[in-house]
Length: 84
Length: 266
Image (cartoon, rainbow over all chains, first blue to last red; front, top):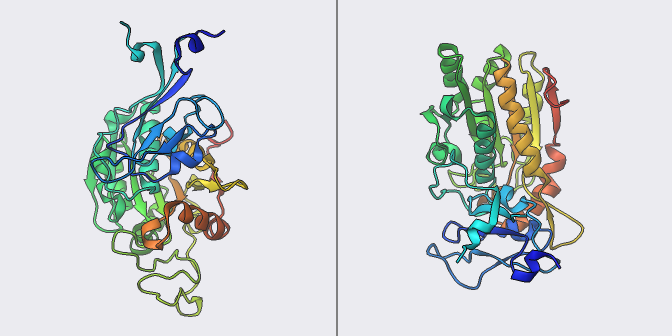
């Protein structure tokens, strides 16, 4: 069994700055694994910010970076992989 | 206890070229995407310290707030003339501007064409969203036929206003430019209604880098980014992307119009 499954950490992850997010939905529709979704809560600006879900609708995050490149508000601050 | 942060290595991280201020752009606007593409290209080239941004007038007017480079504010449409002056005095600097279609393709069309005709070694990024965004949604020269704007409440009539202006073809018809390209920047719909294709942003990243490389080789580089303006088109963000793919993509076909130095081939 891979190490990441043993300790329960995803192989890749996305860090979202929820206060910058304007809830435009672009990263949500672009994510191939359905790992991002709009939150129920509001951020300080009154938008529903994006939240990262480790195990998405289709599979785990693969750190493809599409959300990072598409985000117009630099709210996807980091795309990182688990160290081998 | 070991923190989760130390277990991860960053693949794509925060860019020092971005100042980190929240942008004034509306949700889902391609101006923000382009800002990050430019920041990424400048860091790859290691050129942040010797780059000058010439801000135009329009939604891109505050681009210097978000990019950590030196900046000059040009009068409306006159960014190519200001850039040509900076570049002639300091040829070692990298000079670029972000202009809108109302700025570069309408009010400053003459400056754009003459800078292109002289082949000035500058880089111009034109964000074409087919409408005057900042001033409240008036008709621009690039507005497609039938689009309802505040100055064409019954849709744009081509008999009265002429056909939409194609800035990339106009610039590419001149002898001077070394690199002319048009990129469709928004996400594009796929057969599945839930998924969109992000190829435009990745192509845009390559185009931005090539445009800076062409300037370093001494050529005029012009990249037009077909974009959306969901607020002034009065559509939701995703509907505006669908509209752009349906109406703007055939009207302004993406493609390479001029590549004199062969930067795309590599």
